[in-house]
Image (cartoon, rainbow, N blue to C red; front, side, top):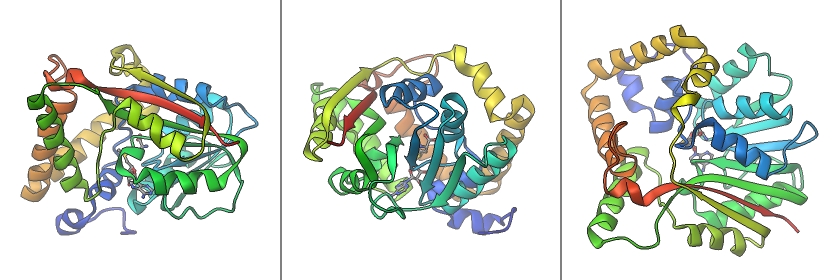
Length: 283
Ligand SMILES: C[S@@+](CC[C@H](N)C(=O)[O-])C[C@H]1O[C@@H](n2cnc3c(N)ncnc32)[C@H](O)[C@@H]1O
């Protein structure tokens, strides 16, 4: 997995998030960069903060946080291909001194106790056993430090038919990523943070997806329209060349339709889904 170009057979064998890393997919959170910035503010990140980002993917959001807040930052992810791209991104953006990246598992973080001021996940905790993961997050967190999460939520109440559709989407994502995937209600997210012994918990619900006015900034930070086009071309070539990858993306498209809807029309089920920003302190 260390070569720059893999054969189609090698690409088909990649785990879903290694594939996303290989394709350099920049971000996943439905609230866009403004949700990332808001989470940083809720965690009181500034240029003296030592931040750990768990499940950093290709480092797009992590580099944005490092630049926006001027903080020192470490990103970990289990996907080696994603970490490779995150390191390249930090170098290309002259952030290598402040933003470091390494392979690491949320359940067994390669750091000593009480090291970080803030631990963040964005579209990652919904893949994790939160009881186990939060024990590990709080272990590496300094006393007084904060955990911040930016994750999907589903409404507490909905018609059984809609609940079934959302369950179907969860199962598709779980099957494709080979990871457990559960969208919690806001109450359940609060419980997760409370059960980990965190205090001063805040849960902010939001159903507005990324504002399209952010698109130009996104393009700029991805590396410009030319780079975006290069990524789309790479993805299209691989999708056309492999039936296995086409099948994966088609299935994923079905789950996206349920959870997010299409760019123009929100499906009935997607009206019951949004993202929460959750914060709690270690005391
Ligand atoms: C939906 S992506 C989000 C990536 C990034 N946070 C973002 O918003 O662009 C989920 C990420 O979580 C990572 N992940 C899943 N389980 C993990 C674990 N146990 N430890 C570390 N990373 C994990 C995956 O490899 C993937 O990169």
